[in-house]
Structures are given as structure tokens and as C-alpha cells.
Image (tube, rainbow, N blue to C red; front, side, top):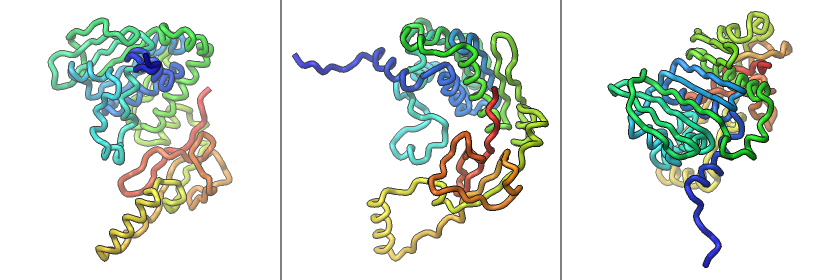
Length: 316
């Protein structure tokens, strides 16, 4: 008899959970991005014991019908792409369809959701990857996901979680950064003892900085703007063989190569007083985005420009 065999769905999900779910903040990140992809304008996060006992995220997004709610917990089930061509035009924060089944396989999860056009919503409970209950219920439009007892069935993973205060700080930092990147949306973060963040929608990034960090921090930041040719910020190009094919096709058809993009524009804030308020910033050849850079890329617009929200102090 051969020694190679196919792993069960439950084992496969637990392995995938090890890649997707490292700590409670990983769960918050995945569910928060799902809420943003669902078009939510109001997102509330509640955690207990640093997310070890409870993580609840409630939003007013598009919600799901009953069939979609059940399919969402199948591996590689997603509403965000349909075929390989869609991978080239991804406009969402997630698309693989692995997060929900991975989270459900290592926790006790409860989903409450209702699409606005539906008269009734759906309640779905999953314990360790197994569906325990599904029923209809009267619910507000949107989605609420409650994750309890994270890693209850994988004690080795649970053992390596840090102190509650450490795990909570990771969650607070994550939610704060998303709130800064989306000033037009309402964010709330509550722990068992207090409201850590309440950020109603505001007009722009400077108002959000004032809202989250206060006037003193905002006064220490200066607005910056920059423009760089796109090839300097590392945007991907087709592989060499594909570029050669395109050039040959253009030569055969007598077409000229498209003109280069004028460049990438960036705007945001910097805490470095040596930078000019406006002007051209020249990054090094190996420039990449991380927490230490003055600017952090937030999104690429269809006009081949890059807009940024800036880099802000990390909350303690």
C-alpha cells in the first residue's frame, strides 16, 4: 500500500489556519478587510482578553444571503474573483477565500448576516470547522462575526500567544492604521474595560490624525507631496518574454509603443522637519514601503498615479 494520501478537509484547514491566523490580530485583519470589501461605512470591533476569548466585528456592509453564508466557509470560495484574468484587476483587500474556513477551524465562530434585499437573516455557528447550527433570524442589514476561544483545539498554537496586553496592542495598532487609511468611514474598537478608539467619519487625513492622536501630534507633522516616474517605485512589468512578444506584435502592426506614464504622485504627512512642505522626493533605488518610510502607499488610481495617506506614529 502506498504511503501518500490526501489530507482530510479538517486537517487541511488547520494547516491553512497556521498560515493565515498567527495571533488574534490576524483574525481582526482578515475580518476587518472583509468588512471593507463589503462596502461597510461603519465597523465596530470588540475584543476580550486580547482577542483570545472574544473577537467580534460588526459592519453595515452588503451582508450575505443564506447560500452565500454557507459557501463562505468552504475553502477557496470567494465573491471577489471568478477566473484567472480577474487576478490582474483585483480591487479588493482579499480574494483567496481561505480566511473564513481557516478561522472557523481553530475557534468557535458565529456568523450573523442579512443582505438588505432579504426579509430575514442567517445565523450560522461553527465549532472547530464543523457546522453546529444554521437558522433564519431577524437581523439588521450587514454582518456580525463573533470568534470565541481562539486556538481552543490547537493548544500548541495557543501556548505561544503573548500576554493579553501585548495581543491587544497589536489589535489596536492594526485598527488605528486602517482608520487612518479610511477617514471617510466610522471605526470603533472596544476592549472589555473601555472604548479604545471611536473615530466617526471626517473630511480627510489631517482631521483623522487630529481625531486619533490629537492636536499636538498633528502640529508636529508637515504635509508633503511628491512625483516620481512609475519605474522608480517598483510597479510590476510583464516578464521579458512577454515584453518581447508585445514589441513584435506592435512592429508587425505598425503601431508605436504607448507613451510612458507621467509618473506617480504622492501626498501625505511626514514627521521629518528637514523635508520641504512640497516638492520632489527622490527615493533610493531599493526603496520599499514599511513603517519607517515617510510615505506609505495606500492605493493605485486608474490614472497611473499613486496616492498616499502618509506614515503615522504607532500607538502604544
